[in-house]
Image 1 (cartoon, one colour):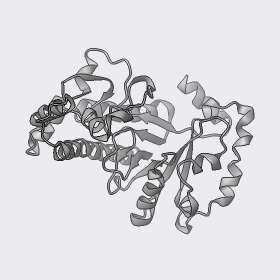
Image 2 (spheres, one colour; image 1 turned 60 degrees about the horizontal axis):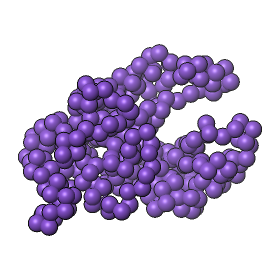
Image 3 (cartoon, rainbow, N blue to C red; image 1 turned 60 degrees about the vertical axis):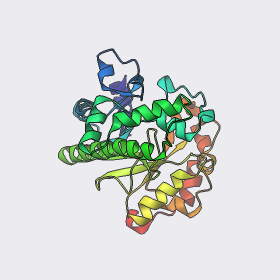
Image 4 (cartoon, rainbow, N blue to C red; image 1 turned 180 degrees about the vertical axis):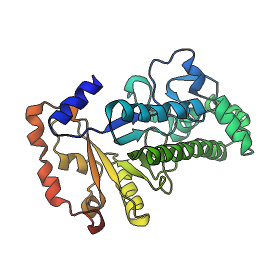
Length: 298
């Protein structure tokens, strides 16, 4: 299916890009669950792999390498540098968990697997003790300690793993001559497929932000990476509901205004759910005419 689509795109004069979700694996076998994110109770995630395991990072790198080798793809977008959090859930279930509060969602999103525990121990962090306090707090123990400091420390283990994975991806891109963009955010508390990349990813990886977040975080990410760090930057906009124009999709995450000019790449997700005869209704040219790229990116 994938190779057929690639051949069809090239026949139409389009050069495809590879889009790879590095740590998402639905339908894990019992053996594969050895590498899963594990919560404070030791329960494995049914979908999220933990990149603290070297085997998981090797798997992600091989996905990129294999796609390049078999399909000749040289441009990639990758997501999920870190284990996906509790809110993502399996098979893209979107049942809301707002009633839990951000603290509980964070506690339930962090990983306490053997690889994370070993990594934490090397850094002088007692992850097992933090897991015990998480269990007490989430279970409603009135005597449980305030978790804020614990969650910050455990989150740092997760972020450190993601940064190490990014460095390995950057090295692979250099070795194979690939252009690789990575999904990220400047929000250090992020727990989803857009990983915290603070202050920025390795120099040869292009960060791209999720521009449809109602909080406007994606546009803040673009500004931070572009203006403060001088980086090439991309952005993704959610094109659902299907009748949206590109301009409407951009505005859903906050009016972009002059920040639009900082974008070097714009990705429209998910055009595969639109009928081909409706693509003219996207009004892409309206956005092109409003975009005034920086001179160094022209």
